[in-house]
Image (cartoon, rainbow, N blue to C red; front, top):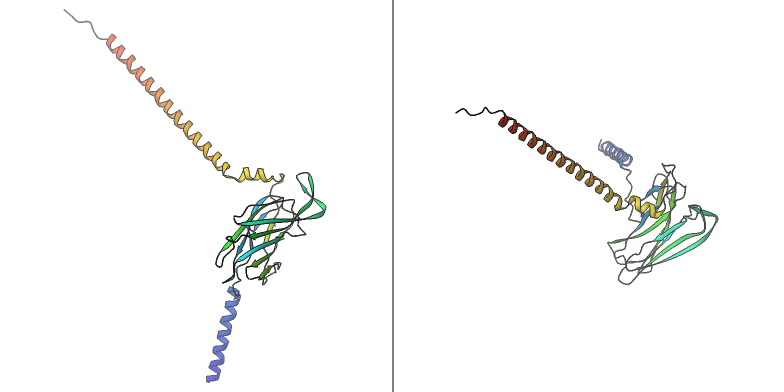
Length: 252
């Protein structure tokens, strides 16, 4: 009987474990890895993206980050943003056929970007660093996979190069940018046009218009009050004058 009870208990535990695995996936949490943010954008557009690099070592610091742009999805325009304390090197490659960028043909595109830290700018344990770039027009593909290498001060190199896997995450996942079809038939904006459309100036214009309309309404309201006051005063004067003219003459 005791053996049967133990067997039943073990079966119950296995059943609970199976339910937990089905509901929660029961997968060990993946360690922090290099990502691209935002992780989704529109095909044909321009955008600002940042490669976020966390330091996973308890004793060593990250001293170099290398990002490879996908060969099957070339981008015509790629520019980097200065990161204090880090130097950047850009490698290019030839493409055939050329990439079309606003009517121009680009036969050479960025293949690799390398950021190297100065002595006081390393990514220390327990911290992370972002490396921004601007690029576009984004290719008409479902996703861009950026292979990345992370070099540590002790000589170790972590290769974040594994493409995404259906139903799970690979051991060393590469940063992935998901691209969705553009919703507008209008041609994509250039980087300058995108900055003007999405920058803070758009909000300022909207606020200025709202303030202008409010001031105009206030002026119109004050004007109406002034006109109403003048009309009231005029009517009052005319009424007083009529009453004075209608008084009877005094008798002796």
